[in-house]
Length: 93
Image (cartoon, rainbow, N blue to C red; front, side, top):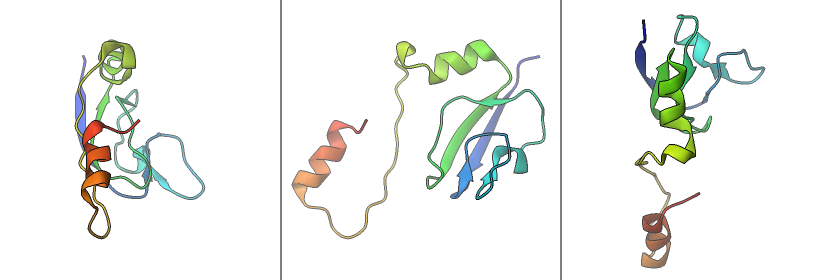
């Protein structure tokens, strides 16, 4: 059976299931074996993370060759000027 888990990954959690010396990992939140993240969020990011036990689906979501459109929300400190906002609008690698 193919399943999909939608997780609101908290700040400070690393996007892997194996234990990490400094950070909590996905295994601390999901106790179902055979699931893998379909994409990644930095440890210092929080938000929607999809987990699946379907390798084909995981590849279609995460592999750049499938060119899935993704939208990210960014929080900035202070008041960025128009030039800095324009950089964000154009996209970030």
